[in-house]
Image (cartoon, rainbow over all chains, first blue to last red; front, side, top):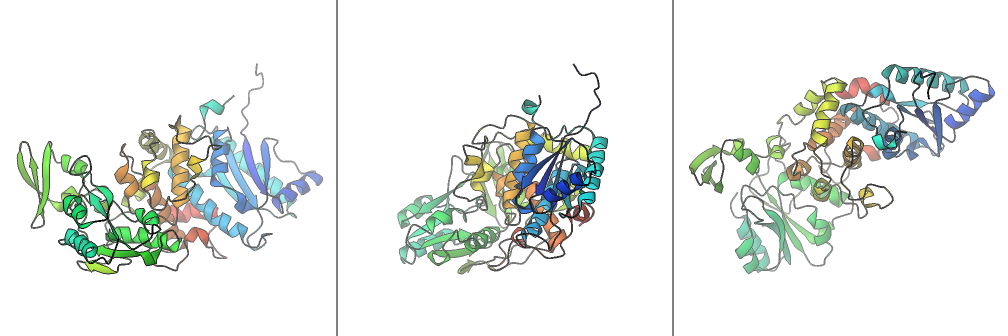
Length: 145
Length: 323
């Protein structure tokens, strides 16, 4: 039985191992807080993100998906984030075209030194998605508990 | 265009090619099906060139160009783009193919003909630029323009990207407003867009016809055939899976799709799948500069390329839709 039933969105954050994942760590060691409903998934590079991962996240109940990678020009593998940038631009545009609000998807470049930016980004993103409400357009009812 | 069948006979008779890829009648006279011909009698008996030859033959050349010997194929302007794209991806062995370019006035579609109130059609023939449609209830003449299938109504170009010999004249790019429908959907609110696509995609029966016919969908192992994906050849169970299948399929061919329109033509449920591909093409044109897949042999597809100053996904929200 739920007594305090204030709804909180589920956010999936895909973070590049070499920058944003360390940035999240830094925001923790700096005692900056970001909402606990952000679930971080570590990936080796922002361009590892298969578009299917994003759809899967929505299927299994995510209300927003964010990709954090190295700033353009700073990719560990030189060019990965440039490819990711083009792919995500097109994918998010396509999701928008199918009626999944654009504000539910975001790409943000966060370096390992930007703990504060990481926390601020997550706070802002959670706020945006909370305002949008629950994801009902790309969910799989069978995956809802 | 006259002389297509004669050309097939000539090529086989002179032994300059071993096989010819063309069309033969299917179940009905209007659902022509691609076929491979190896002998002159075969061509004489069943080769068909008519106003229903919409099928794009380039995908068949992936297998045919690797079977040894020389193969000839009849390619319409839109088919040549798929052909070039597949050569570029090292799928078709160019040296084994003799491309006979065929200029095309647009291919007709039985659904469109029926939409003019005609039923029980027994034959359709071209007569001096018009279509003579014979039905059990009498004959009528239609303008060819009024009988075209969707992919031909919004034809992008009559220019052949490649050919070894040409029947008819080389054409030029055309503007038939192929992005108008995409722009109309973009102008809707998210709720309306969602409702529109639900209405279309919920009809999907996952027959995989769009994937099987698509020249760009020619991976030897497809993600949708992967037994671990949970998606293998099964009917889409709910709204999510219907969306997932079509988003992923469109994304996998993005920047390689030549907009040949075959996906929509073969869809038994009449889902306008080309609108998904055209959205990607429109975005790519607007964000990364005009690009036509398969127009040449050396440019990189935009998703396999980048520049240092590409627009950010957040900016694209503003720029992508408006272009």
